[in-house]
Image (cartoon, rainbow, N blue to C red):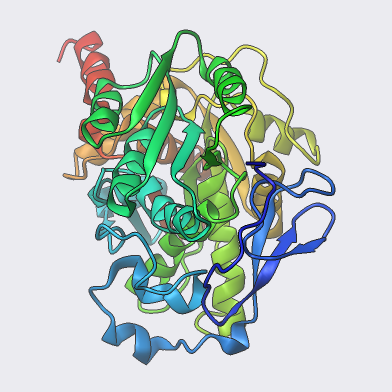
Amino acid sequence: MSLAASAPGMQTTPAVDGLSCTDCGTDYDPATQGRCPACGGALAVRYDVDAAEIDRETLSARRFDGISRYADLLPFSAETLVTAGEGATPLVACPDLAAELGVAEVYVKDEGHNPTGTTVDRQAAVAVAAAREQGAETVAHPTTGDSGQSVAAYAARAGLDSEAFVPARSTFVAKAMTNVHGGEMSVEQGRYDDVVDSFEDASADADWHSLRPFETPYRQEGAKTLLYEVVEQLDWTAPDAVVHPTGHGLGVVGSHRATADLRETGLVEETPALAAAQAEGCAPVVDAHDAGAASTAVWERPDTLIGALEVPDPEGGTLALDAVRETDGDAVAVTDDEALEGAVTAAAEGVEVSATGGVGVAAAQRLAEDGALGADDTVVLVNPVAGNKENDVLRSHLMRQGV
């Protein structure tokens, strides 16, 4: 089956008005799979927000429904989503870190509380539902690790098979739990670009539904629910800045889509500045941003301990740059040691931030040093992964310091 084929009969919510290519603007049916058949650009869901019956009172009545409470602004109904209770993650105040940064408030949006310990669960709830609606039997994608576990879990709930292509250096937990959830896994030597090559070779003749980042328009739809929750948890006030550790760009792009939805529905008027945070050893988004480039270039020698973010050729690089620039945000790279120490800094306040989340903490520290944060600002740091999924690298960091 072609990854650009359409499947008839997919039932979407009333607000869905189709898909549009983010590059050439061509419109497509919601069942279109893969990238734009005309130009290869990433597709995005198009909404008629006037058809979405959503307001603050309605959402308050759905308080414990996770991401399904936002179904009016998602492609699928609450009954169609493949939910495992994802979303509704804590927004944890960090007053000591706020004082250090010289801002009014700092919060950690702790995505480690999702069912498989990663923010990808939001994406999988929507993208796996789309695959099932389109008649798929097997979902497949290359991954740095965590999304392999997440997709395997959600595919199992949907009654689908899953295939993950993972680098050998991925965490033991992610690899082990991918198999525990019943997913098939191909562990590849080398780094993420080698994994992508293997995935492309294997998928050429396979009847798989690709969940590769930005090869389905539905992963970023799940990702946008993070910012919906943040503004609701802040009593319907947008933070001044949101810092996203960034690999492919799904998080920052999802938040960018959320800002448009929130404004168009009248739920929130303000737009937070979105910051993409990367490790210095693999920072194609930061490099392109600093150079004023329209798109990212391949990072020739990726080398970082933060394996979840070691993505040398981000699938959503151009869209991530757009998200940063259109919200007056920034892109910041930090060293591995700064990232690991950032996670330790958050842990000192009792927040279990992963090494990946530490990239966001360290990036906020850099932004504060550069004068990019104001004294009255509210800053949200996204922790994409549970700290205990990356405990080995954090413990090694402390052991090097003699702890």
